[in-house]
Image 1 (tube, helix red, strand yellow):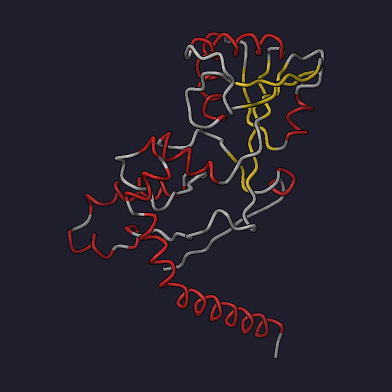
Image 2: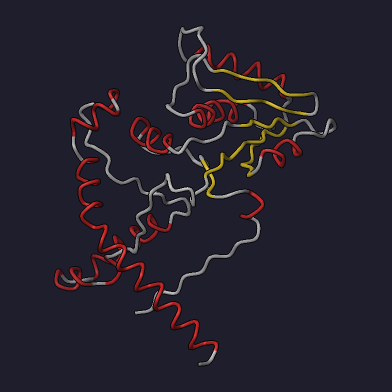
Length: 252
């Protein structure tokens, strides 16, 4: 058997095994999804969202491939007859249903580096903005750190406007940046990289270091916030992401 034939045979065995496991688990998957769709169970899990339609599946579309496919389909539809629309390949998308709690899926926060401002200045601006969001003086569970060449400061928001820390940070930056034209922001994978970018005393910059991202917060953010903020999390570690290539060939 040639090397190519051997790998083809192994691939077929893996595919057959995966299909068999999927078919065996379909009844369990059906019951699990039905439980997620139960309005009473959803309301117990998310009291603040009581009355909303239960969320069964969360769509992860970080590279906007699904949104692009949908936009293309909407563009194509007017050129097709009703019969063609029912069977046209562009109507369908290939999706993979994953359990985000699988240990094979690693989630890392994406930090922010704000260039053109010191951590002390940004801390003062963030504190003033936080007080404008509400009257509470009690620290919430939304925590972050600000770091620059002079050191590091811990921040606990008292009046976070979003369900996730990253959402509150994005709300602050959306308010702060337009009023400070010389200040810019970049989104950085890896805490050490973010801190290094803010470590040059000659070039003022502040690393906004976000806390580790709990997987359950993915659903909390979508249920209570509608959609996740931009650059909420990264799949995998920063070092790994610098070198990977992912390719797909879909033939018709």
